[in-house]
Image (cartoon, rainbow, N blue to C red):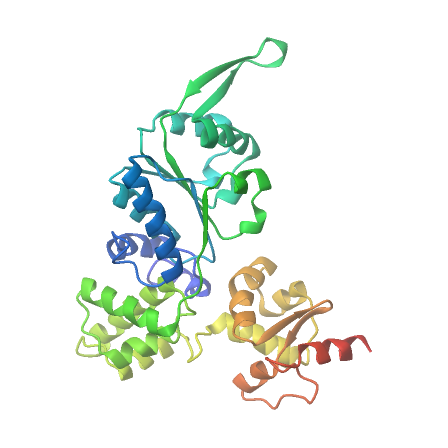
Length: 357
């Protein structure tokens, strides 16, 4: 179902970007490493890479940024270009379907440019194989013709820095992964870091928000800045329409209740999945396809949108026989957990042994 803000109700807490958010996301992006909040280890490592490259007067090594969506990979790619005083060319893996698509982009690069490929694990194999040579030797071989009469024309490429972003680093081929000089993994944010993100965003957007309200929104943002900024805008809307425009903790809680975001950051679909697992299947085990049918969703939606957070929150465990609700899931739904329910910290092995008895 499409909501009033251009997205769907089911992807309200999805970390993936939706069209309604992209223009505002651009205005909230930090422009320097000093402005970038969170990821302290990645920032320190990246600062060394960029500082050394500037001191040598060369282009930085190719950089791979991996991690869940919404944590700032695109922002870091733009910061890399900004810190190096270079232009950035942006594309995505799915857009590079043929080697010619990549060759056209590479041939237009100027020395020092940053080429950012989002979801690089989805790049087509012919384009990926062309990328190997471009990354190592800054040239590509363009094949003209077909069959025995085909000829290879070498094409020089200006020295550039490739920044690849992926949400599935394991899906990258070994040859591509090995050609990156620096690999960074982005971690989920702590609530205190998200509070800083929200305070910064509120200042940029001109939102009057107190510290307690920021902490409330941060605690429901699944450790993801993109979700935090999305919730901030919805809370602002509520405060402007049903309040005096100021975002205090009462307004934040009321707004998040309207949008079905509970105190742990679960939305309607998350609770539907937990409810089906607990009430419909006695806590499991149950396969993801069966679970998806029970909530009227596609298996991919349950597996890619809901399940990662529910597993990380300790409410669902994956076992060889299917998904199983933990004691925390039963408690969150206000139900008494059975004696053999998985303890979210200690009891996974005992529960799995019970399942196989």
